[in-house]
Length: 140
Image 1: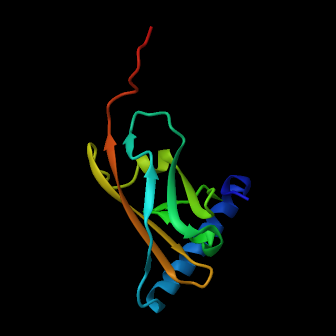
Image 2 (image 1 turned 45 degrees about the horizontal axis):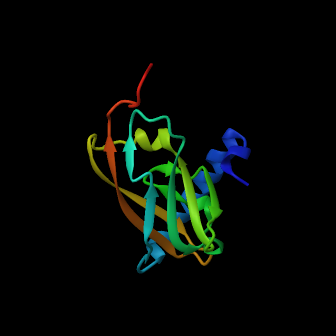
């Protein structure tokens, strides 16, 4: 199931519940489980027509509570397991492009936050270059 299949109100209600769980669990966790993430695309062109930003993790798909996943303040849009069984999260690129404080042009650190199925806080960070260079290509 993806968030797209949920009604709009349901999506935000589920996300708010997931975020509340993350926030409530965070003080009880003495240290976060730090994971490695890779973000694609690694360069985000504000003028592009891309649809999603994909976060590849090194944590098992079955270990993540998908309803708790955010990238900075952006709610997860869809998720899957990759061919190695790791959790992959997709976020709407238009929501990433409008993050408050985004340096354009510049290198921006994005933070993946989630809870495991045993309620451990998971954190991962990666840098993304953000540019504004038009759509490019040859127009004829």
